[in-house]
Image: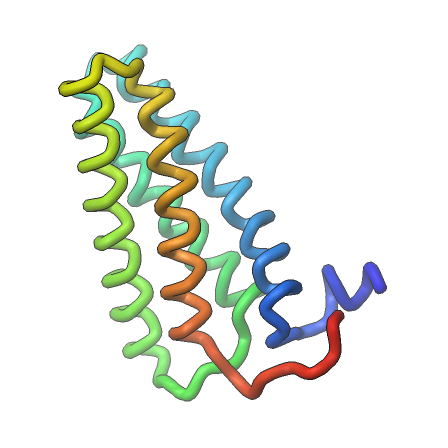
Length: 142
């Protein structure tokens, strides 16, 4: 069962959601860590830091997602990349709007605002990428 969960290719949504959660955890560490470093140590404006950290984590997310989470698609590689980037850009905009609203208008610490944004953008990104990389439906649970 663990081999199916971690090693075998799968189009099953539960398996992909689990794997995408693992990918998101790695991307989160990069995104959140760089946001903190850029803002605190390089004294960048928090929205500039949030943009740079998000884009770097998006790159890692892409590499891990196409290599481990989503395998089958009916689209060409260039269409995959463009669509993945479009989903990412929408995620970036959602991310920045949420952080800006919570931090600038409600006085929430920017890192806490980022945590809220991450949860919301996670679901947007998973659903968008699941649609992009959809293959034949799986009938087995794992």
